[in-house]
Image (cartoon, rainbow, N blue to C red; front, side, top):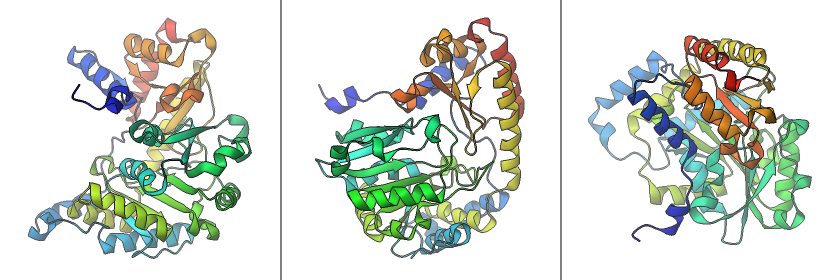
Length: 387
């Protein structure tokens, strides 16, 4: 065999698999509405697009970028943290520009986890958190997120022996897929545990600006977090720049430096015009109209799901409904498959986010409102998928 064993055992990335099935159906002339992936349909601000195109015209823009990221962008990230959370960051030592958050989240494990270490991952959780286990063979333990605890991990439920070996914990609030948020009290308690057991907290703050109820907090608002935590922010969801692959990791200077040493061996940094556009995105901020459009889509989709008798918690943030399925409808995989082929509507089975998502599906509302309305109409007309 010419391929590594790890690639043969590696599961197909769920969203790549879903995308391929949808492409095949569309090639056959079947119109599918994809509510299974978060892919915002709106464009970035015109000012952001202008900054990109102007920078592209500069000859210097096509040279290798600084591997830590442009200092101007790092300063703007630090200023965003000061204004948003009252957190002061050193842009020289505590901010690293990365090629999208997904890559950086996975590479962080190479920077902080030893061969005998354990990674604590939320279940359900973004599939990238399990990639260090799948790709590099790192040991992991799952933390069940349940409604009774507000979809927050409960450290007391993790075995002491696992906590002693834990070196990294991924957390994600606002949460994908549940839409839950975490307050400062949660972060304070988690930082105390991280300092006690000596593990790194990685906060994935992907949905910081898509919030409908409550206030989003940063782990770095807790002063002691600077010794044990880093946080990833992305331009994908807030600024509709998902295809641009621009993000930042901030926090502990020691951890940031370790991640930089890994990142600098693997990639060549983010294209300069994209970074220039990122500066402008932070200067202008998210477009309020985008949040309002999500709020409207959330309301319409939630009403439609309720009319079908499906159970869910209204998401306080993010762009997803985490929908529970009665056992009479079968497994989440079967339900999603029937929905795709009979209603031409794609959703993601909960098992894509871990075993604890078994009897749920994730439904995204990043599609235009008219597509969401059509999807609900097609969904409701299929007897085999109704409650």
